[in-house]
Amino acid sequence: MSVTVRVPAKVNVQLAVGGARPDGFHDLANVFLAVGLYDEVTATPADELRITCSGPGADQVPLDRTNLAARAALALAERHGLSAADAGVHLHIDKDIPVAGGMAGGSADAAGALLACDALWGTRASRQELLDICAELGSDVPFSLVGGAALGTGRGERLRPLDVGGDFHWVFAVADGGLSTPAVYREFDRLHEGTEVPEPVASEELLAALAKGDADALAATLTNDLQPAALSLFPSLADTLAAGRAAGALAALVSGSGPTTAFLARDAESAQVVAGALLASGSCRAARVADSPAPGATVIRRAA
Ligand code: C5P
Image 1 (cartoon, rainbow, N blue to C red):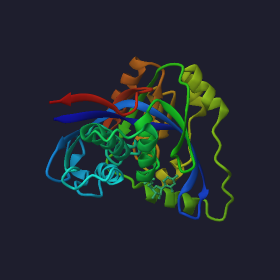
Image 2: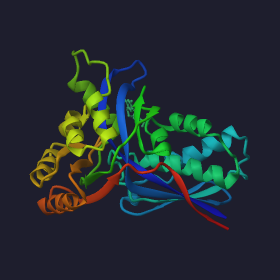
Image 3: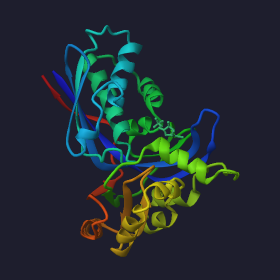
Image 4: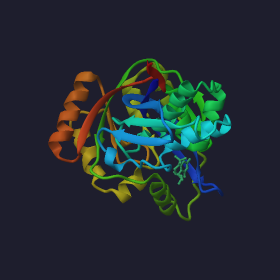
């Protein structure tokens, strides 16, 4: 018996960041859009918790209990009082989402593991319970479960679903190297030292552009408050952004905390052109084309 769950990556079309809170987190107005790049998590019964990983960047994924997917399985087992024997599981993660790229790959694996273990173990957790566990695991994990588009407030974990009126075409440039999310938030704090950081607020223009499916209007409103911090730690990303703009992208921005960069294209054809130009520029390791919105974590296979 095994269960396979497919989970999407995300891009933040708006990431408005407030000042550091007493708990070290930052209040956000975080407009998430799920994109069609997916990791697959397969859960199979085993004597104990075991993680394996395949795909690009798999060597950078921890295989111990620090892996968010492992923590998701343990959290579900604990809540349902499963013994270690009953909660033994082999989680295999087949990665396609860039690792440590600011596209919520780790969060996707956590949401995938949670849904896969719930199906494998028959724990039948309610949607709300799954969302609560996701929120404990990380700020971006609830969105990986629900997919589509949503406004995340608080530290990003409180979600309001958003309407999306059409498909958007993206190119993602995978950088050579990674950026740690806490390091980018620390750099954000350093860059804002001594200044009053305004309350993060979702842009009404951006939400309207999403609802209309209007790529030009969306391009005009994309923002990421973490971008200066990511560029400060990884200055060559500016070259990647410039290469994508020169190739005809409607807009270019750092994805989340980076270092993946995201390019909004007019249509699928233009996305291919931008991807080719980004690769040819030598300013990124890989360029991936993906459409949005994409569905959240979904069981795609059950094998006897
Ligand atoms: O919640 P998550 O584990 O994904 O967050 C990773 C790190 O990113 C946190 O430890 C924190 O440094 C930073 N973060 C933040 N404010 C948020 C979300 C994340 O400062 N709203």
